[in-house]
Length: 373
Image 1 (tube, rainbow, N blue to C red):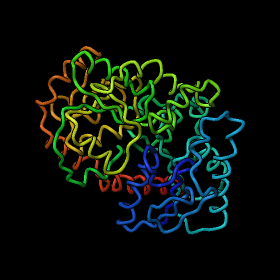
Image 2 (cartoon, helix red, strand yellow; image 1 turned 180 degrees about the vertical axis):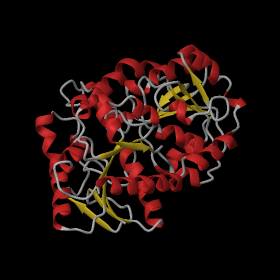
Image 3 (spheres, rainbow, N blue to C red; image 1 turned 180 degrees about the horizontal axis):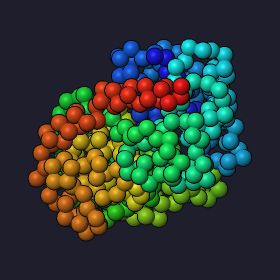
Image 4 (tube, helix red, strand yellow; image 1 turned 120 degrees about the horizontal axis):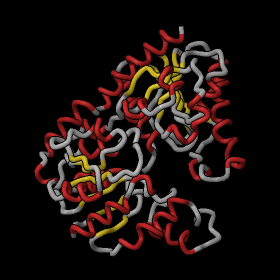
């Protein structure tokens, strides 16, 4: 099978640090290629993922432009997708398109007479409610959790082939490091992730907390300080920057609670694996939960609020804890040492390894091809 995987123009694959969709693609593609699937990757030219072909318009990722006004940024996704469309028009050896480009991908592909398409829903479907309420039925979709599909508009549910939980390469590793005393919240600093709740809980309990992740693409405290002090900087009024300034900065004391910026590679894995627990006080219905399965794969018990996909991923009392309120979250945090890290690792290997995700996607590919015919 020849599959064109459309990762979009925003970040290279794999990304240097933060990059949810690109990390998913980088996890899935090697496992597919091990199963004999030939991959044509549509991304940016700087992508280093080993594939059979790479097509691109932009040499570097365009993520820095993503927060600009729509009339300044609209051409980026469309230029990328026009390149994908041109590739599909000029050749007849592509059996399936696995699309990961929000809205623009399915909108353009549904207007073409081309190979079958499977579009993966990585996001909050409320962002573009009008589009998803009238989702084109010529495009097959899959969710990244059952809870995501259950909340989706009827048109999306009618086009859905099923849900595939996200995976992590960490499930195939056995990273063992000395456990520290800190708890960790890993991910983009924003109101939806609820880092302020984690900080408040840990401050009350006297437990050390490390926040790791970018703020509106800013990867270090030094970068953020420049933006926060300059009212004329384009990012000064960005919601994520304002969230950090108004709701996070007052908790940072350089001792008990700290923000270390964006971390990647071995540094990130070591920081994560050495934590007593990973906190997920999410303030929205999280669709995918990559960070949750990463924590489990490293033997770090997740403790979160009972929202979105978390009840599908966490087996309460066995592989983590789920709470309904902030007060209950604090109570479970004090009991994280009751959980067995090896049980978390076993669960991750059984449910969230790249091979499990690849096998499930191969099933959906066959369904999408049959549906397309």
